[in-house]
Image (cartoon, rainbow, N blue to C red; front, side, top):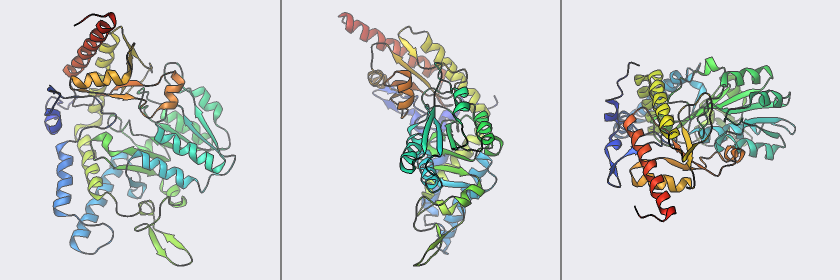
Length: 413
């Protein structure tokens, strides 16, 4: 590992703040990674010197804004190794990307067709396909998981049929951190004649997404998971497929010619980008991609995997803590529960110590149902976190367990 992560915290001013009188320990990076100063500065330059609409005007500000946003698209093309910038569609995040794709698919899905997802999907990659099938009369199928929290690949193989039009799966589970065998999923789907969409939201910060190497047909991710602005993201699609799919939304900027009788649409990607885009946000997203590339995704992965291993060791040493799921290959997140305590209570008590974690169902209720759980506490360290912060987490949990156990026993601490 060549990156010096001891100095990288200086890029994140928010990490110096205090919460409830304690130094902030931010361990909710699977929900939203903090934004580096470099992204804020890129957005500020856009607002101060190029603020104008894109693809509309021929004046200086409009042309400057358009050029910068399209340069940002080129940056993201390189970030995911797409063949063409026309394959990079700006969206508000993975949720909109997947919803947009499902709406476009509504025009080509017929009764009796099948959509295959997995039980471990985030709701954003579950509900749109479920609703599409309810609307069109197609069959909605979800691949189960094993007791360890891994995708049951034998079941996936058996569930593929000649009517399976699309397989949509998470690269990394946002609840368990399970790294799915996406290359095998793509291979099996393509051998079956099915298209493949990958939800890469939880993979982007610590996994090099190469859409050509993966050979996926579609991919989605959110900007705020990699330090970009909220409300930004990308839908990648093979150009030949984007050219055939109808647009999901209609309005300004995505048309070629509008007549009383009919309308023709612009070529991708503008065909799918209706109205005024999040110009500043998209420029900030490109700055975030450059920031991640400068640190090195491989180095980030090594750092974050080491932090996750340490968190696992510390929490496994606490008898009252039950880690949820034991996948062989875990990345990004660690979910757990504390015996006799609700996950909301654990998160609230940690917050009083300045420690930010996520609690609840994590938009993964089908997976929790399969595991017989209502919710979990989730820890997700990023490269700017420290091993000392994980020690604080463990010490905080020990304190919470001791205090609550004493209260149950009637002791006053």
